[in-house]
Length: 298
Ligand code: PAF
Image (tube, rainbow, N blue to C red):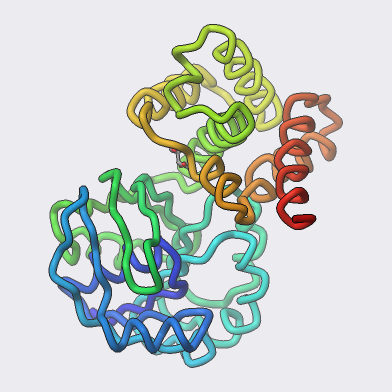
C-alpha cells in the first residue's frame, strides 16, 4: 500500500519506520532540511535501547503532499493541525487517519471532504532523538476507529504492519478518544507540576487524593456514564507506565510547548459551556500555561 505520513516528530518517524517495513511510505516534514536528512540517512529506530537496521523511505516538505497515496496518516500535534487545514481541505481525497491527542481536533474534521476519515489513539512511548531517529521505549498499541466513512483500510492495516506494532479497530471513536483524554488530563498535568513519574500518583496517598479529585471533575464535565470503567482504565495505564515520565513532564522539562490546550484547555471550555464549576481543571490548566510562559520569558 502507498502511505503518506504527515509530520516528522516522534510519532511521524515511528509510524514511518513500522509502516515502511511492508508498505511504500512517503514522509512529509515541516522543514525541507529534515526531509533532506531522512532522504540521506533513512529512518533509524532504536527499540528498547537497540539500534535496528535503518529503513529507506522517501521524504519531502509538507507542501509537496498532494493526497495521492491510498492512505495518509496525520501525525502532527494537535496545536499544529489548524496550520495544516488548508492543505488538508484541498488535497485529502483518499483515506486519512488523525493521531492527535485530546478531543478539540474533532470539530476540524468535518471541514475535510475525504470519504474515509479515521481517528487513532497511540499508546506507544516514543521520543525523537534527532531529525531521522526515533527511540521506541514503551511498546503499546495503536487504537483506531472510524469518524466518517468505511473501515476497509483500518481492517487491512493490521495485516500491513509487523506483529510488534499492533493496530486495533475500535467500534466507537468517541469512547476511544475520551478514554485517552481522561488518562492524559489526569496523569500529564499532575506529573508535570508535581515533577514525579506516573506511578507516584497512585503510590503516594497524598498525590492520589488529587488524582481522584481531578478524575471526578473530568468525569463530571464530560458527563461520563460508567465512570468506574474510565477510572479503572486510568489506574491501569498509570500502573503500567509507573516508571515513565509523561510527555507533558518531558515537554516542560525540555522547554517545549505542551499539549495542554488540547487536553485541559478542551475540558475547561467544556466546563464553561456547561456551566459546571471545575476548579482543579482551571488551576492545573493555568499552572501549565504559566510554566510554558516561563519558557517564553526565558
Ligand atoms: O502522554 C503520555 O505521556 C502518555 O499518553 C501517558 C499514557 C500519560 C503515559 O505517560
